[in-house]
Length: 236
Image (tube, rainbow, N blue to C red; front, side, top):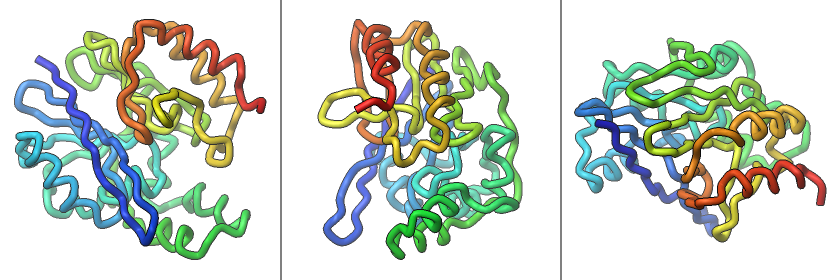
């Protein structure tokens, strides 16, 4: 039996405060975590697991949708403490996860002259020594499938839980004030690919989307919602 548990993790820095929403897939007794949050988030993850009645020692896999600091920030400390956990991502993302290529977000931040604190946070991410590649349409466990959804970053992936009609969208989509929308334009590295990825998922049988930024969105008309988002694209 497969269950989904959405975690709500609080990020605080100075006056900045918001939640992020990693997801745990429970497949019988095995646990799979989709994204890990920011650097130094392991204690927050552990408390969230405990609050949900989950034993983190049963964590088998971490799947990273992409290498942004808020998605892979805690993965190194997690595998240090729980070394049996396997980390997976797309083949295109592996060089960034391992630190063999410079973070695309860091490149962008430096080019645009982002705030020093933001740049330092990206630089603080510890890279892994190894990771395993997942491919488009790969089955992770019962009814759980990888969907390649490039755009926000090359090799970005989403996770489709077919029996539950649910998509874990990573950063492809966001939920803001209850409104489902496309990823923020300033953080999307390839807007054409982003729209194509939305076109790819629009015909999936989906009634719920879990956004890393915003949480759960449910609708009986999700296909129409997505079609409107696609039609609007990045036009103001």
